[in-house]
Image (tube, rainbow, N blue to C red; front, side, top):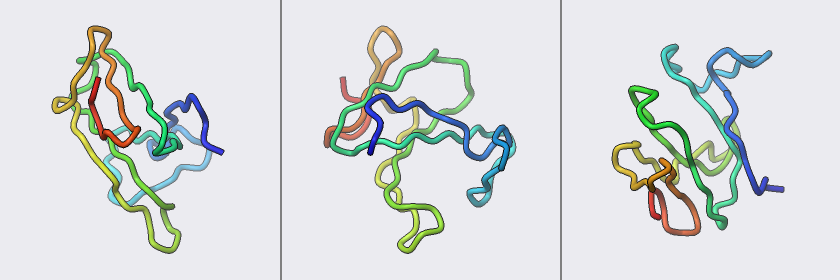
Length: 99
């Protein structure tokens, strides 16, 4: 059910045919989502310094469903560890930014 190589996709920035609001959406932010499996490990990569702020969060549940969408973990980019190729890791029970 969970993708082995998930990709982030925009969910609340108006680039979808049917825009999704997630609460107090900031029009200056880009909100993206990917379904992952908490038992797997994932690499997050990109080009550092291309955005003013980056925060990564994991949630459990479903927005609007019974029990809601609970935050499991959250990290700001400057608190993570990166390798020489600007990659950081998450999951596998170790949380964010190990490598």
